[in-house]
Image 1 (cartoon, rainbow, N blue to C red):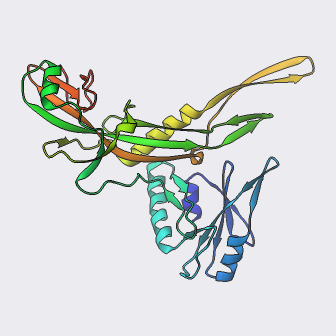
Image 2: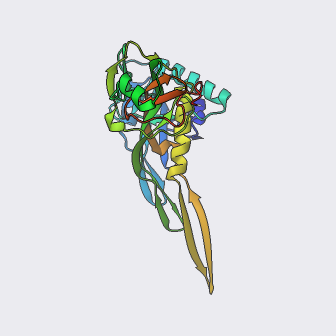
Image 3: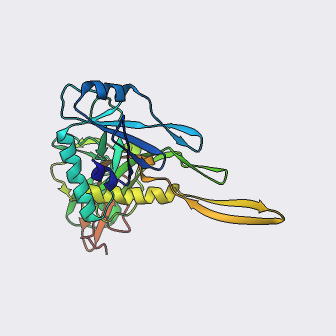
Length: 302
């Protein structure tokens, strides 16, 4: 368990009774207990623990690992053998790849509540999340000014929502990172995408469409998005201090910790009409606009 939390960027401290060790990352504190004794687990689960952070009491989260199926905590988070095996594997991959394991805190009591961040619920077979097709093939051909074969291509993108809640303090200055929003990146080249996210819905896969496979898979996309969000939410602050007759000015950049940014990510498709006439022209089937840059790396527009 120590290695799992260390792979996620937590600092581990050995503790005595009534728990085994604590894991700290910024203002987040996770107290961990390993036991098969229902009475010990119940007492730990029902006790409120707080972290003293510069005079502020921050509630600690509680994690219980057990192989006893009778232990079902009401407030804490439960890990059993299958959870330990799963997270140990994720941590091993993270260490080999040099990436940090992303762990988010769930609120469902008595169930696994710390898990690697996963994509949102996938649509059922035969259906996808996509922007609607508003321009027909004939309209796309007219818009392109080309006369030739037309095919519908569904280009993948990663659409995400995020919420950040947290702050930092430095020399009496309080910096807040509170923010929420959404965005998208291409699943082909990783570039930001300007999409009408409100128009996305679940649709049946068009029978004649070419489904372009993502070049950037979920894990890489999550890391790109997280890196972008940390940079976008960072605050550069100028702090003035006085010492006698002298005034000193200091500039410092504050970045939100990774664990303060909650996010969800879903694979979404953008419909594109490709017309192969004298030149290859692509038309966005949702907006009806001609693309100045191809969405697929395998296509060169002339």
